[in-house]
Length: 416
Image: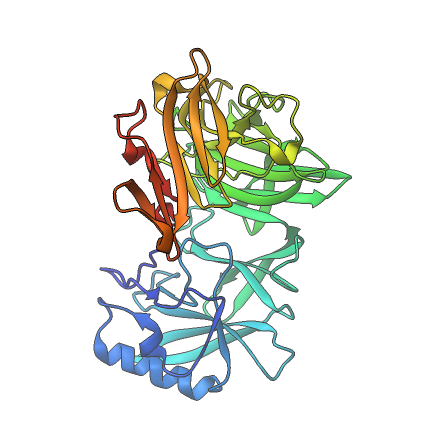
């Protein structure tokens, strides 16, 4: 996340990726290459005076990058404001929002908000109503594990932060969903097993106004929510929800002709799957792929725990059609996967070995690929090594060229 400061802008990023950090030395916690050293020193000295040494910075959970200090000129007066998220260790560990303003070259405390909550889920400074001034938006909850959170929107009136919005939510995304050059607020809210929905709102005259709403599966427990794009470039929210003991449903919410719609048929083998598989941009092309799975030939009657599923990742279009972008066999126990070339998608099955696996053509049973594994002490150097971890070497024992190349083997740790 990039936070723009005065005129040219100030980029602030945190070196720590944990949920909180001791206040201590502010300069050591932030990198601000465009912030003059004198201003850095002033900010550091001011925070040391205001905050206690054992207080903790709090980083929003729902954020691209972890940071607790945000600097922007929200009221366009040419003087920056600094917003600091921290936890007061003496007051029941509640999260607080401190606001400083630069006046006469010095940072001065102008406002502090006690949330009475312990975890910060979301924080941003955005011009929601097109006025030119930026609102202060943040969401908080009693703990990181709480589904139900409180959304607050504040406006700066020159003297104080005035609370304009206070409402419940589960997840928030702010973007231009209807492509009208104005920011929309997309909120997930509701109650599991009763009614859950996605609602698109606009912020006007200090209030949220509903623009569109679509119901979500009431029984889904939202495990993973991704703000991304469909294959046709449309903005969408991808909601991966647990259903029952182990199944997962992905609901894709997008905006189309004045209403929120759910994309695709929820009963297809990608949106609805036997086990959890999260949506993500797997090939780094800016389009979010939905993960699904199918049972390979020969395992139709096997127990669920014994099925070596083939995993699919597909791009969806707003009209509900989809295109498979990747297919892979994945062994989570051994932490590797094999990408399946397009010509072999849907045409192979899995043959399990003792400490190994083969990918076999469904039609004539020819071996397409083989992976075996052994501890490093028992590995024979004459074999073809595919990869290795701390204690294990992966290899194949076939001397001829296979139909799937060796570079289609990947360790899961390399992907992440």
